[in-house]
Length: 419
Image 1 (cartoon, rainbow, N blue to C red):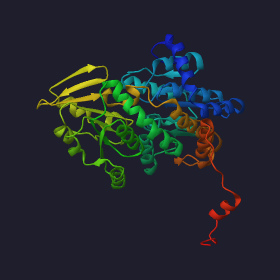
Image 2 (image 1 turned 90 degrees about the vertical axis):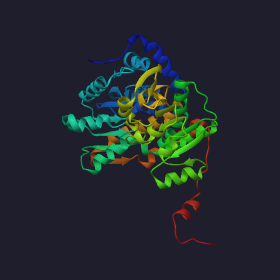
Image 3 (image 1 turned 120 degrees about the horizontal axis):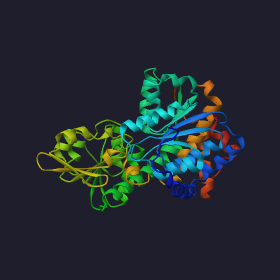
Image 4 (image 1 turned 120 degrees about the vertical axis):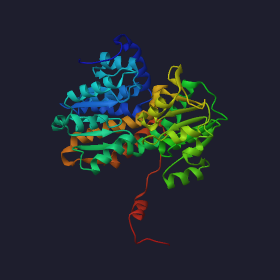
C-alpha cells in the first residue's frame, strides 16, 4: 500500500493543528525557508520513524521543502495523532504509515514500508529502523548515506552496535545535542509526563509521592516539575554521581525495593529493561500507579504482571488494574508506553522546535559530508548546536554579550596570569 492511516477525512482538522504548532516553531520555520531556496535534499530519499505528531509534521514539511522524498512511519504504537497522519498524506504529500493503537505486527510492517523506500537517510526515534535494517533488511544499506537518532534509548542501542562493529553506516546522535537534551529532555519531558499522568488519571498531584527511576535529563525535569506541583519525590538510581546529585537537589534517594512501599505514582525514564520488576511489585503500596516515559515499555516488567495477576481489567481508556494474589492492586497507565504521548500530546511545539531543528540540520550535514564519515555514532557538530541556540534566543527576543578581541585573546593564551 502507498500509505496506511486511519481516516483521510481527518486531514483538515490535522492541518489546522499542524499550523497551530508551527506558530511556536520559529527556528524550524526559518530553516524551512532556507531549504526551500537551496534544496539540500534534491534527489534524496528519507525514511523517518518518529512519533507522528503535529510537531513532527512540521519537520516533514521542512524536509520536503528541501527537496526530499519522504516516507514517515510511527516510532511507537500509541503516539500517533491520526488527524496529523491524514493531513501529512493529503495536504503535505508525505507518504505515511501510522495508526494510533496499531498492533506490533502492523508496527513492523509499517517500518518495512519505510525501508522499502530505499532511503538515503534514516531518521529514528528508538533505533527500530536501524535495528530492522541491520538484522533483517541489510540490502537497504547499499543506498544509505547516514542516519539520525533522537532518543537516549536509541543512542544506547546504536552505541552498543558500534562498539561491537555491527553498525554499518554513520549515525548522528541528535539526542546528545545540548539544544536537544537540555531543552527537550528536561523541560519537555518534565512538563509532558505530568500532563500525561493527569490526563489519564485526573488525580491531584499535590501531597502524593512520586518515585522516579532515572535521574538523567528526563528524570531531573520530571522531578523539578513534580516538586513544583507539591509532590514528594523519591529518586531511584544506579549511577552514584546522579544519585548524589539528586540528593543534593533535595530529593530522597533509595533502592527501588524500598521506594515501592511509599509510591503513589511511579515513572521510569532509564532506557533500560525491567526497572520495575517482581521485587518492587512484592512490596508496592496498594493502588500504586505505574507508568513509563522512556522510549520502550520494557522498562516495566509487564509480562510478570500479566502472568501473576489474579484479575485484570481496564478501569478507563489507558488505565488498567492488576490485582495480585494478596489482594493489592497495581494500576498500569498506557500499556507502559510513553505516557506523555499515549495519554497526552507529547512535548510542546516550542520544545520540539529545537529538537527538530537538530534533525533537519544534521540531515543536511549528512547529505553534504557523509562520504567523509566512517560507520559509527557521532555527536551533533558544535557549530550546528550553537547556531540553533542562537536562533532560539533570537526568536525569543533575547540578546547576549559577545567577547571582545582582548577577552578572546586572554581565554586562548597561557602567558597571562595574575596581574
